[in-house]
Length: 409
Ligand code: PMP
Image (tube, rainbow, N blue to C red; front, side):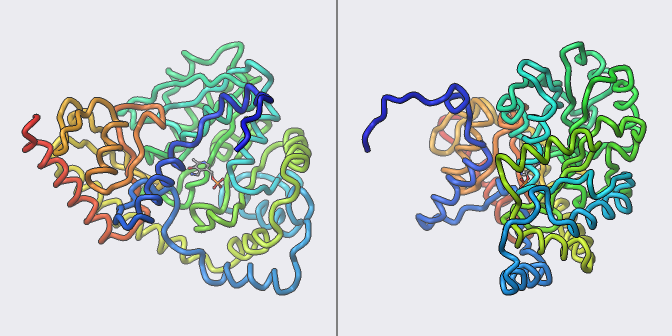
């Protein structure tokens, strides 16, 4: 390879690879070498895309629905999305207020690029989805992290929001159910945050509701704008088909909000993305308008897996799992493991050490809490079958036992 003297941009030099994707890559590499890795780092449902959705995607190809569509999505998908947002989320939107894109991620970037100028501050409650600070920085903004405490269920409180919000704050990035903690904000908790935001009329809310279908509370997770309807003029709701509809690889997401911001978002996406996949959009329309029973079946399956994982983890010495109310992740305090040595003599000084040792010595992939802004924790996914979860728990327990029995400890 010839090394070029031509420099890269500051932006490219500063960008970090996603730690979750990086861990999945390492785990996949070991699996290719024949190691039986239990993938507790997974960030996607193991369930396949429903058959009727796949069939619609294939039929779209057969009938040559394979050309560019309108850059902000097909008219019928936007109509179905506006209808879903009104009926399911109690959000008053029209199809013109909806933009479809290639996954929730690019819609988040487009939203941030549309509302931020260089140096604008964006509040992000931690633990946060690993990409938020990176995406805010890419958009020229300045992430302002607020630590949400375990005693508050890892949820941002109005007091903490009030303390950090200021003249340079341009937006709050809100997420419920939360990746990585599984926290779900109640209507009254959202309302309390909205009261603070009412005092700051020039602050946007970008709300990421990608895990809306995966919840274990009695009530469905509320959409931010459904609770704070008076703030609708400055709330951008981002959602997608990846998690609930088991369509991560199709790359399909959407956003909705006031037209004054959705039109620039659409123009921006039209320039940098072009239209989202016509095939994915046809499949997405079927997913939205077809039989929804699989959502409930998957939800119950996730609940059973959650219970197996959390009760197993709480029996392992030194691990303190936080019970998730939604998503398919469990955030686990591993502070009591630090200072010990593994069977192979590795001293555990951080959650990164724990995650590396679990991969190398216990054949479990996981993600370190630092990637989500909180240490020392590890994020374990339950997007895999109960048998595999049990095997993972056995390996974790054995890892702990041999740690104690280590001649170095
Ligand atoms: N938001 C959150 C909270 C996520 O966990 C993810 C995916 N891991 C995304 C957004 C991106 O989703 P998509 O695949 O639709 O781009």
